[in-house]
Length: 133
Image (cartoon, rainbow, N blue to C red; front, side, top):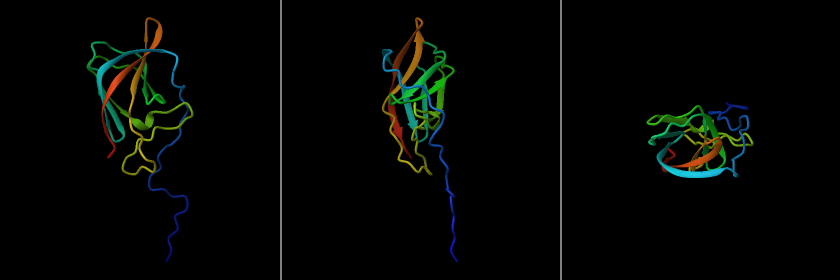
């Protein structure tokens, strides 16, 4: 007895989405804040340990993938699903996970794009952990 599963996948990970804007190479680079970022398999977590609130912003990963956020207040913790980060071509971040078909990509650079004095600026955060499984 033969079992044929045509077109069936155990896990159907989304690998494309609507494209986001390209990385803003030409805007000002601000300071690196002592905001520690933890990657726990498919989740990115950080607490805004600065004394400032960030309004609507964009979180950037590895100068490629972005995720707009409504803001993050001082002391607030955000947990973001890595599969919601998308690049300018519509490619979804390779988050990995137990059923992943693609090798997970490391998180090496995390930045927040915000507006200061009516001009966009990129600030860095500190990546302290990359847990893949």
